Length: 283
Ligand SMILES: [Zn+2]
Ligand SMILES: [Zn+2]
Image 1 (cartoon, helix red, strand yellow):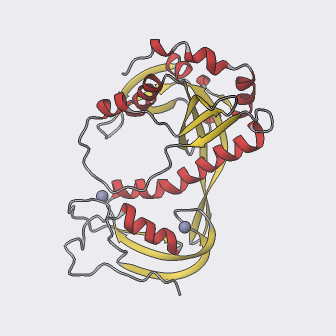
Image 2: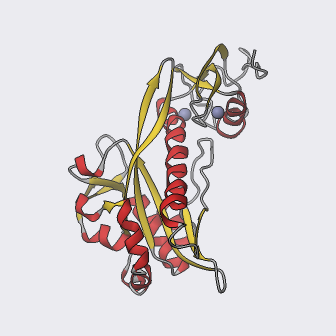
Image 3: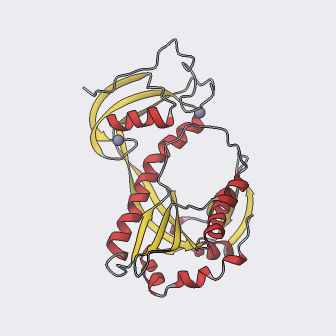
């Protein structure tokens, strides 16, 4: 029997309201997810404004919908709107992609380049839904951190480039075009200009594998590009279907398989990229 059994009271003002929306937003959609106990508490506290599930169901051996570990997981139900639920179920994929980057670094890069260290900087945060006080373009202009920071360790510790990680279900080889929100490319350009360090973009293909009633996320492949090569391969910018957000579309030729990244480091191409920072501008 899992220890976490707390439920949202029927008399709560957040009954039939989205648990992730900070301000009451009526929502009668009940979402379900299998979670280990620590993750159920974490989601409740960090993403759901301390609003516990409305129900705890069966406990089965399976994959946790948040941390992706195979363990005892319990069915949990919350009222959550569709927009917020997409954010919640994306966390598992993002955690798996981050681990894939660090595993690649440890296996393929570290043995050949022991003087380079890769650290996760923008650790995935579970957050509630809140209105932004700044426009996205303002935030981009002030941004200094991307997902990973690579530094030379000796003779003096010195940061050399960023890595921004994008996660999706598709393989670069099968895509017609690569899509990136204009907000996201502005974040990358803003951080590059603020820190004076170039940025690579990794695309990690993460897919779901089902082990009913649970499912896990699995990293299938990884590709890389840099922000200059990506921009040089831009096809167009258009409104995303049914959304306010604008996205840019790029030729997939911008990307190379991740095993070529070792050669990129050997040629110290990131030093050449650093000399091109002045030419970048926010969209
Ligand atoms: Zn978990
Ligand atoms: Zn919501």
